[in-house]
Amino acid sequence: MKKIRLFGILVLVSFLLAACTRRVSPTTATSEEQTEAVQEDTESFTGTIKEIDLLLNVITFVDVRTDLEYRLDYNGGVMITNKYGDLLAISQLPVGEIVDVYYDDALGKLVNMHVNENAMRYENVKDLTVNLYEKTLKAGGENLQYTDNVVVYDGDKLIEISALSPQDELVLRVYDGKLCSATVEAGHGYVKLVNYETYIGGMIEIGYDVIVPVTENMVLTVKEGEYQLRITKGSHTGTRYVTVTKDVETTVDLSALQIEPDKTGAAVISVLPEEASPVIYVDGTQYEPGQEIELVYGRHIIRIIAEGYERFAAYLIIDQAYKKYEYTLQAEGTGSKNTTESSTEQKTTEGTENTTEKPGDKTTENQAPSTTEASENTVMVTAPVGAKLYLDGDYIGETPCSFTKTPGKHIITLTREGCITVTHVITLQDNGKNDTFSFDELELMGNAMDFFKY
Image (cartoon, rainbow, N blue to C red; front, side):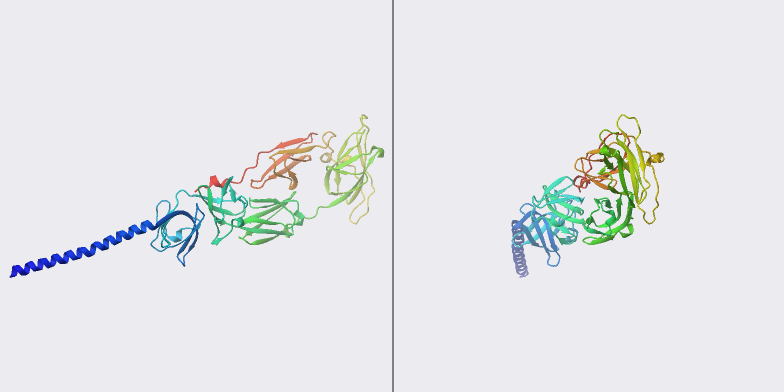
């Protein structure tokens, strides 16, 4: 009887074990089928992160190949890695990053993503040029093509690519030669000058990137930051510090740096013999005999030319409110020296005295150059071609160009958009010859595309 009961118990246990095994098998199979189903529904693409919505848990991507947008849900189970395979939190992933995306097409959910290892990243890019018609961005000598769906961010604000300025400092992300995103790391503000009138025609420098002539109603675009503002005209220089805030117009009052107006006097020049029909030049500008000429106090060069007479050149000293000068020319071949005389006739004005001055009697410092040395010579600058040339702070023109030769030391400044501005100090001799200068080609601003590859 006991054997029968024991046998019955063994049969019951075997039945129960068999039943348990049947219940486990269907569950395992269903799990595998679900895994296979998820894998079959998973799609992938390479895209640029356009927006991360942390409230709705939605990420928007732009496919780098098709330009289509994808909005995918995500949760804490999404695996995110950098291009080296290290795990990242969603907060560590910036907008504009180029990533490989894997998602469940049926559910519209993100499965995992990792930073694309073939995407290129360029930092500290500046001096850019955007061509809206050709849809290219030029930086560091390279042209990058972009599409209407390029992702451009300034801070946390999505902006149009047309809003970028050459003064901005950017991070660019490029895939297969195509610009996919641009992020402004350092933006720009504006500097407006007031009470600048006495500096018109001079030069203004703000940092190293902004060096331009002073003109009326100036508003300059400058990269945000703190700078020394330097303004010059001739021998006059003024400096002050300015802080440029992003997207803000900063007004700079130059009243404390104003140049006192140069003191001037009038000169009336007559030439003997009257029948010589002379041509008079003062500092390279032609005047008529007897014409009243307004000149800044100081030393000037006068040249007189008449057919059949020796050419004459001398220093003309202006140190009074009004003075008449008379010069006598000598016929060619006479061997006589040109003489100069100044009459005592002068307008009587308050604070001035009637005096007599003979430029020929001046000290060695003011002695007139020889006839050959004082001929109407010029200085020609032939290179670099297409640069703006400033002589002692005054704009001359675009090279190649020339200017009247004045002996002594001078400062030549050469500028061109997108290039580093350079300054050369030259010394011109009283040698009666025309001078020609050719300077090195201006260097482009740093080649960001090659210099800052990530």
